[in-house]
Amino acid sequence: MPILATQFLADLTRVAQLLGAGAHVLNACADRYHFTVGLAASLVSGKLSLLPSTHTPEVIRQLTAFAPDVICLTDEVDCDIDLPRVPFPGAAAAGSASPAPVPAIDTAQLAACVFTSGSTGTPVPHRKSWGRLIACVREEANRLGLSGSTCAIVATVPPQHMYGFESSVLLALGCGHALCAERPFYPADIAAVLCAVPRPRILVSTPIHLRALLESGTALPPADLIVSSTAPLTPQLAAEVEQRFNTRLLEIYGSTETGQISARRPTHTPEWRLWPGVTLSVRDGETWAQGGHIEQPTRLCDVLEMTGEETFLLHGRVSDLVNIAGKRSSLAYLNQQLNCIPGVLDGAFFHFDDSRASHAGVARVAACVVAPQLDAARVVQELRRRIDPVFLPRPLLLVARLPRTSTGKLPQEALRSLAAAHLQSGGIA
Amino acid sequence: MSEKVSPLRQPTAPASAAALVHEVAGLVVAALNLDLAPADIDADAPLYGEGLGLDSIDILEIALVVSKQYGVQLRADSEENERIFGSLRRLADYITAHRTK
Image (cartoon, rainbow over all chains, first blue to last red; front, side, top):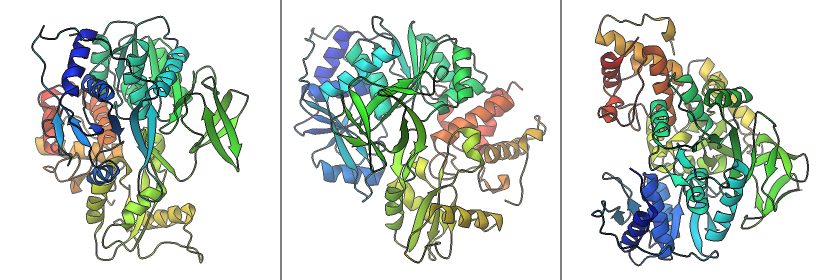
C-alpha cells in the first residue's frame, strides 16, 4: 500500500518526539521506510545519524566512545544492540495526522556520519552535510537518466551502507522518487517486490544479488534500469543482465569517504566518468579525489588510471583494502582485532583468492594464527564479537609461527604459500 | 577434507530423509568450498551465525544451489523461512516438502 508524503511528514514528526535530548542516533531500522523516517526525524531535530557498516558488540562499544549520548532507533523486536533503544512506533491511526509542512533543512547541517576502519583499530568518522549528500545524488539522478521522471526504487542493499543510503534513500528524498520499504534478499523475493511496484522502476543491487537472480531461474519482471555497485561486474554478467531485463545496466563507483563520484555503462565502455566538479590527482603514487560534493581531498583505496580529464579505468584494490559484498575493512584493522584476542600470540589476515573467488564472485580473506592454547573455533568465536562475519577468515589456519622476514615484515605472498602448503598437507585447523 | 563429494552427480531422489540430509550437506560444502566433509556438519546445528557460521552471502549461495538442484525458490516472507536455516535437517525437510525436481 503506497505511503503518501503527508503520512511521511506525520511519521517523522512522531518519531522526532521519541528521540530524546542526545545529539546522535544509530539508525538500525531494517525497513527502508522506517530508516528514512528515522533519518528525517533526526534531521529536523538537529541530530546526527550514525551509520556504521556493522553492529558487532565491539563496533557498538567504539560508537559509544565516539558519541556517549547515542541512542538506537530500531524496528526489530529482538534487537540486541547494547545501547538505549527507541523502538520504531507502530502505525498511527489513519487520518489522525494533521498536515505538517515539508521541513527545510540547512544545506550546511551535518546529516550523517559514516565510518571506515582505521589502521589503529579505531573507526574513522566521516561527517556528511545534507547539502553535499543531496548534490551528489542529484548528479547521480542525471547520470542514471532519471531527471524528469518519477521512479520506484527497489534496493537489495541496506540503507545504512553508503551505496544503499545514496542510491535508495537519498535518491528518493532528494530527487522526488518513490522508495520501496522492503529489502528483498532471495531471487524470488527480488522478482516479486520489483513486480509489485509501478513502472518506471529501478533495481539497485550488487553483483552478488544480480548473479543469483540470473542463475536462479526465477522469472524476471521488466525493469527500467538496473544499478550495480560495491564491486565491478564481469563483462559477461553485465551483458546478461541487460539482455535478460531488456534494459540498461549502469555501474556506480565511489567510496564511503567520498560518496559516489562516477558511473559507467559497462556494456558500452570500461571507462568511468566522474561527476562534474570532481577531479582526481595522483600524489606519490596515490590517487586522491576532491572537488564537487566531496567534503575534503580523499585518498582512494583503489588503483585508478586516468584516461582523460573526466575519465578513468579501475584496476583493483590497494592491497591493504578488503571489500567483501560492499563491506569494507582493511587488513591492518582485521589484524589489530585478531591480535587483541587473549591467547593469540601472532596472527595475520591475507587475501587468499581460492576457487570460490571466480565461482561466486566473492573473494574472502584468510588468516594464519599462532595461538597454542586455543583452537580455531575459539578464535573464530572471539573474532565474531569484533568484526563483521563477512570478514571471518576462510580458512583460519593455526600455525607454529608466521613467515616473518628478518625485519619482521610479513609479505602477503609468504602467507599465501604457507597457507597453500598447510592445506596441501591436510593440516587444517 | 578426506571425503570430497561431487553432489551434482548424486541421485536427486534419495531413499530417505537421512540420505537427503547428506546430499544437501554435500551441496553446501561444494557450493561454499568449506573445509569440511559433509558428514562433519551437525545436521541439527544452526547454519547461520553461530554453529556452522555461515553469513548472508553463503545463504544466498545455498538458496541458488537449492533452486537449481531441487527447483525450490526460497522466499524470505514464507512463514517457515526462519526455521529453514535453523539446521541442515530443517533445510532438507523444507526441500522435501517443496521440491519440484
